Length: 341
Image (cartoon, rainbow, N blue to C red; front, side):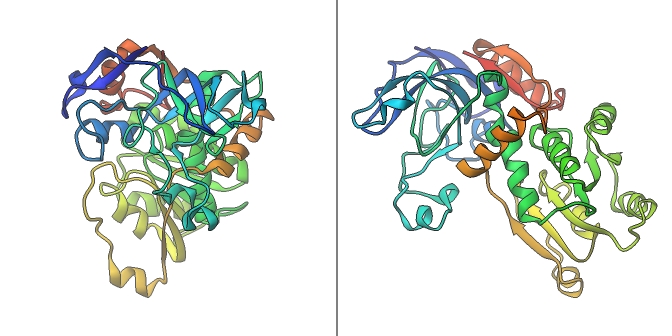
């Protein structure tokens, strides 16, 4: 099968074409023919050598496709099904899985692109534990981004307890996770203040339901926007997708007893948490991981019902993985790029 693998850690040029044998599904597993795979900021960090991926790795954890093979003992009803996949295959039996924390499971086969060969390929292995059936009217390019780009935002909004009437600040709002977090927060009835580093994405974010969109704003501008919305004391919640570059702004934008869900850290480093501010205002900072299978199933239902419309994606052939990475690094894409193997 055709794949794109890491020749080394570095710039987009280290993503090179290669061939590998089609994987064999183990007992209980599925063989999925990849129909589409999203290009995520996590992939960029992995390519640069900042995560567990190493030379020879096949990246790509946002995957949708068709089940074309079953391992021994796998329920036959999965054969031929169109599926979207969660980023990690959990074991289903460890203490983390028993507590519902499948995103933290370290006993299963692992995370695509790091422990497992990922979706920059024509085939991947999967499991009923990380696969959710896709309705026929949801195309595979849309299905590929539902777990990471959409489900991660849903999980973060739940972690921050965002509901109707709340004011929520979303950082990194122009990226794949950000645009869908804005759309989901709007769907929940929240008032959304979207922060982006790209002035060219302002109109798109307004169209998704953001009540205020600020490009390259500092904390004073964010506080002024909140005051215009009738919240001079600050926002009820924040979803921090960028991490280090905007963390202080998001934290200082919160009202007393505000909730911050920390989703991403695009420039891995120690975050500048202000202990005094956090204590005096009794702020809550909550880590929020990628979507689990329940999040993915809920998002599939929302999209299938038309309640949330994933942002139109840029579609490229698999061979253009390096160009897709370069565009993402240049912030040239609103939403997600998907590769079509």
